[in-house]
View 1 (tube, rainbow, N blue to C red):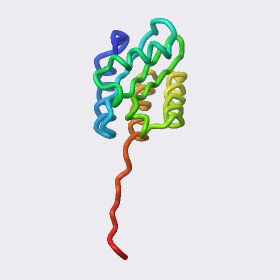
View 2: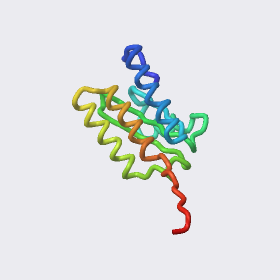
View 3: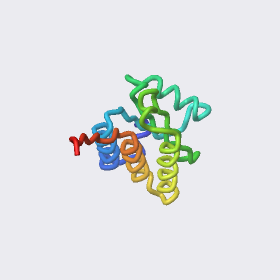
Length: 129
């Protein structure tokens, strides 16, 4: 969360907690970058994602509040459980919160929504009837 200077300690804690909860929920790694992009947004987000420790198992959420842009990059493994429609839905929900002036709430809700969609369903095994 590089642009963390814009957040209070309580807000940073709230975002960090959402990231930890999301990782526990679905076992993928989440990273959040808040700030301006260095050049075109999508390639910049892809470079950030590629520099993560385990990019294939990672989800990167880039938020550029000034440009009103949200980019979500999913690694190859995460993409198996998190499809484009689910990513777009989370991005839309984040943008709605941002438009209402709730940057932290939008980030935390979006990260948790992504994790909820990426969580593998619990398999129930039934015996013979």
